[in-house]
Image (cartoon, chains in turn green, orange):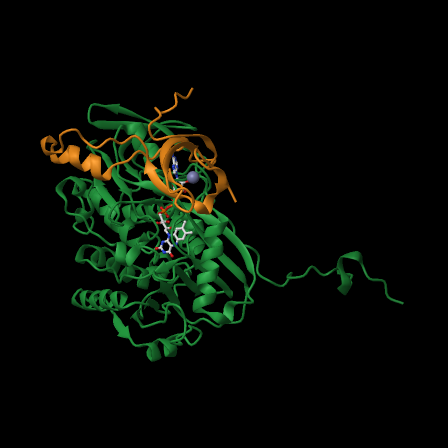
Amino acid sequence: MTVQSPSTARTPRTTRTPGADLPDQPDSLWRSAEPRRSYDVVIVGGGGHGLATAHYLAKDHGITDVAVLEKGWLAGGNMARNTTIIRSNYLWDESSAIYEHALQLWEGLEEDLGYPILFSQRGVLNLAHTLQDVRDSVRRVEANRLNGVDAEWLEPDEVRKVCPVVNTSADIRYPVLGATYQPRAGIAKHDHVAWGFARRADQAGIDLVQDCEVTGFASDGDRVTGVHTTRGTIAAGTVALCAAGSTSVLTDMLGIRVPIQSHPLQALVSELLEPVHPTVVMSNAVHVYVSQAHKGELVMGAGVDSYNGYGQRGAFHVIERQMAAAVELFPVFARAHLLRTWAGIVDTSPDASPIVGRTPYENVWLNCGWGTGGFKATPGIGSALAHTIASGEPHPLVAPFSLDRFVSGALVDEHGAAAVAH
Amino acid sequence: MQLIACPWCGPREEVEFSYGGQAHVPYPDSPAELSDEEWAHYVFFRDNPRGRFAERWNHNAGCRRWFNAIRDTSTYRFESVYRLDDPKPVTP
Ligand SMILES: Cc1cc2nc3c(=O)[nH]c(=O)nc-3n(C[C@H](O)[C@H](O)[C@H](O)COP(=O)(O)OP(=O)(O)OC[C@H]3O[C@@H](n4cnc5c(N)ncnc54)[C@H](O)[C@@H]3O)c2cc1C
Ligand SMILES: [Zn+2]
């Protein structure tokens, strides 16, 4: 008879934890820093734009005496809530330049960050349902091509080849008359993108400070000298506002008027399904857009809730209409179950274009107004804003989006490319 | 669904209404005399507070009349509704 010592006794099979053979969760990817009393650069808002700006300040300009101040948890605002559509097929030269700059950075971002972001270039279809839609879409394709953006006009039978589940029958209320197609467009994993930027910024020595709400500003003439926060006053050489839907709360404290309105924007997911939807489909006329996430959920969204709102929730009838539109376009989705809905707060501007650049304070930079479509811009605005902060001059890619365009009249009207389509 | 109390029709479902943005923005007395900056502020710039906001609503699927409301933009709760020719209620 042999006696087993307790340390070598085999655990009975029945007590094995499910998933015990999977790798452990990684350790924290960044330090949650204690705020210091002073920084060269203070970025207000730890969403995608704030984190990307921090990364490029360090990487492109060697500026690392930087804090990103976040009132909640890192990237818990719109960065956690968006539907991750990335594309650059905007109409005007100014817009396609900044969004295409961003798209090119997306194409190398995984390597730059050394972190998987699951960027999947599965293409985007923007459907046309009326003769006017067709004309506008063809015009946008031509404009895109002149700007070096990949774009094609597809007839209904070609739409069916790219996405067989779209209802292209002529016998529906808003038949599909064709679509624009950008093959290099796609989706990415928003959380991974935020973590990748945060990790790199942290490695460079930048402080990412959570639970730190900016509640006021200290100023001296036309300079801001620091920010008051829920974790004390922090002196700042330069301040960059990256607060998306909450920007007006901050600019009101500074006494600056900015023409944005904050609206709830909702989205939803279905349960996990087998892969059925190979691309991204958007329809401004039927009012919905749909992609299928990496794990298999159908991800849908549409336009903003009509009223101003800071509540991070919206009205249920808006969800009901999105789903009705989705079932009209994709009859195969009729039996899918809704799993979850949520909302973010988006900062919409009068011409559906961002507002980036100078403020009346010489050391405060504004970055807002990205509204329903700023996720795709994340690396692009991060690099351009970092350059702006480092050089003290608006980067040429953001210069057309200055606050004073509302006085000069040089608007960049992107309502056609940015209304329901984010 | 949220009920909105139309001053003329009483409480009705939110879907019957459409939103008109900030209330009490008067058309300038002499528009031709405004500077570009003043005109821009009249055309494009509106308040965007978190909290209490005086705004316009239209009961477009009912009596089709406009009215004003005080609503909290963080809770979405209507505090009061009043007619266009009523003054803005004084709030604490
Ligand atoms: C439902 C939905 C779907 C969307 N879909 C798409 C899409 O498919 N494609 C696309 O390109 N875009 C999309 N967007 C838009 C996109 O999410 C935003 O434009 C973009 O995320 C904004 O930049 P950000 O990541 O920096 O914002 P956020 O992540 O919102 O970051 C701003 C941060 O500032 C913080 N903050 C605010 N005030 C203060 C303060 N006083 N002190 C400290 N911190 C503060 C907030 O807590 C927040 O974390 C969508 C948005 C929503 C809500
Ligand atoms: Zn009425």
